[in-house]
Length: 607
Image (tube, rainbow, N blue to C red):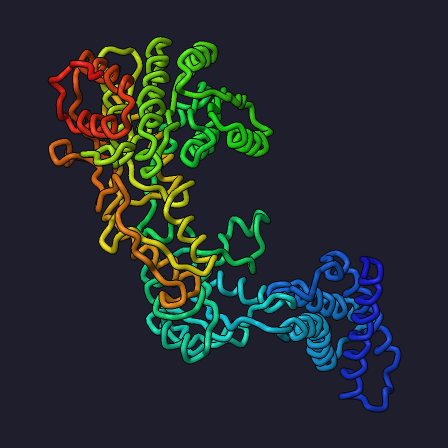
């Protein structure tokens, strides 16, 4: 209904309410209605004064079907003021006031005007509260503002297939109270029992303020049930319209860590990035693209997106162009292969960047075991190309992304990254460029990582395939890793290897179990199979050799260490040796030996 119709209907309704209030007020004290003139004056004064106030306060334009209690306050204000106006006008016109009648009129008018609005809201709520079709029985964790918004919205969505039947909250003062007719049945510790008793299908976490540690504790309780686990969207996403409040999220990767994400002081590095020219290699990859997003927030002059994959560079370039269309950042997409030395020197020479973040690399362990030559060409000589270009053109900062697999490497990928670190360390000794490397563990959600693979296996009905029941890994999120890389660029003095304190290692099998349970299945339904350790894989990872570790943190959550490095002449001879080896088995062994310091004294080229 349009504004004019709404205004007319509310005008008629409120005028009738005024008529009813005045009629009843006079009838109670004068059933024979002997004072008709006084009644008429009172009625006219009340209607006119109230309608004027209602127009000024826009009472007819409010959407009463979704109104809150506070929305009734202007109505009460209009009623009270209109009664006062009637009283004073009565005194001026009639010379006297019957306060008993006007008090009754005030009470009745208050009730009728307020109840007419409240009826609209109640009618709407009762209509929406009726579930339609097959619904999932829901347990909501939390009875605060988040849960209030969530439950109200769920009940209004007539086509939505949720029916909230229980709430849990750890606040003792909320126990056995109800929210929209749903009882707070207990605390979070009682989740398993309540799920069984109430036949719950879905558990929804509605406490946005919970820390990751608290969330982890609740997840552990949810794992004991067969219910699916979802979380309500962030308030800022709801407010900005990115999602609707009833659109539940699946369990996020960072929530599987069981710890808080590392919070780095990004403001402290804004001066290092603002109005500067930044080059990111591997800009279309998981880490490279996130580095681009983080860097773009600080308003660089140019952001050069270099990558070998056409579609991935197109995707991140389009995303950044759309996200920062109102800014003054120049986004430059470059299709180039870091193995092409001439092209890389051309790009660096043309754009003269202030900072290079080198994220381009082959990272998949089993694939590099099958293709060691490609690991050498891309991870070692590709790094050498971009690093030497940075040195030649005196780029102020160069940060290389490394890996925990570079520590005492047992595989081709880790060995190639360790040798790439050595190239960086040697250049740092003689260059005007400030070189640094950053090591971190596995990245949750990155392409080729274990979590997306587990999710796909769960969606296909299982089983989830884990290499070994005792295998452990360090994990971090993509934003965490990217922030660390950027932070390292501001901390480096030359030749350092920065390492994030990522807490305890996580068992891969526990990660798989968490994903299965939080996806709403039991281990028996999906199943877990152990496929055995693949070639080149370790049972556990390290971030620094014991002799490299420095106890003192250079920055909260960041360690620094100077890993041992072969001198430049010997390294160049060994690289020439690697370039000439064609036998895969021999190349793999030589790579691992060099990375672990075996045979550094031998500079003879094996033919």
